Length: 388
Image (cartoon, rainbow, N blue to C red; front, top):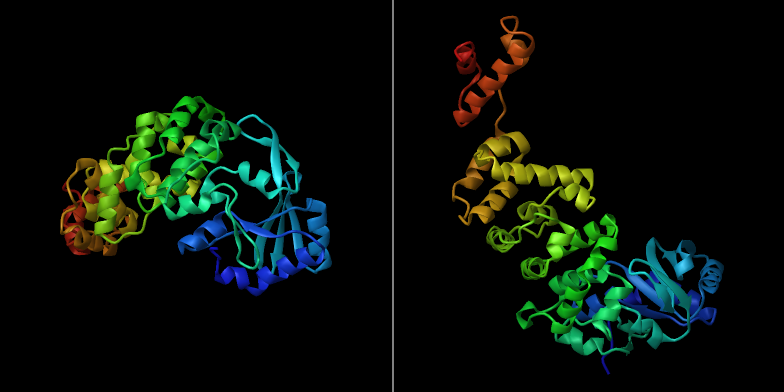
């Protein structure tokens, strides 16, 4: 029998939570991403626990053990337990009573198998005891070892329970599946039949899922299939997936880590900030990269105006859009532009210039400075004042 061994499983904080629950007679199983990633040898970010006890008993047991308990989703059976600064989400076994494709009404239960069958994909329905014994009610272990992503039971039924699972399918496929094996045809058929359900989802949920997808090592195959099925047009009208694969290739050539905002910039689309509810910081960065990639400015000028990182990203996006690899001299040009400092101030042109005329002349001289590859010094620029 396969057993799981992982540092987080034996960590003191984990043991404190397990002891608190078991001492009160509650069942404890770890489930979901922590189990999946540990079996794949990948980093574990969140530790989720499933239990056969209702949330009020979880709260009482952990409170009695001196642990901090936060009722983060208690109506849906979830409380967050904090031990030694580590947060554990503890959720009661559940079954769906009713769902509208966005949110479900659940009933608490005591049966692990029923809890497993309401989850999305087989590889996400693996449970493990505190002793490392794996419980696999839906055949997830075989699929995980084969790097195969499958819905649990009927793909159509799972999607209609929550239409976000359409996007989650592609996100998990990009992160955990073997793309060379292709895509599960039953899943794609069910997705194609339920596309209109995407319009019921909040843009916040859609945006979060899309950004997680674009942060995968290589999401290009998944986004290409999304484009062919019409999913991309639903979530980001006007987007074009064609240049994403070249961008991923250029990122690998330059040893750049995956970056969701950079990849979103290459997709384009109508008003991504609104459609995907981007943060202000992400939208500013996306717009800067996309704008610089399309405006024709040399990488050195982009670096001078927006910094080296934006210039590098814009150069890669431009290369992906045009199909021409970045010039070998681009990194040096970016470095020159990023280090350059315009040697004039407004006061240097006063009182000969004032008001709008001052701003116009200063901008003209700055453009001359850029055109000289940042070689003109203060004296040379002052000698050009008034000659425009």
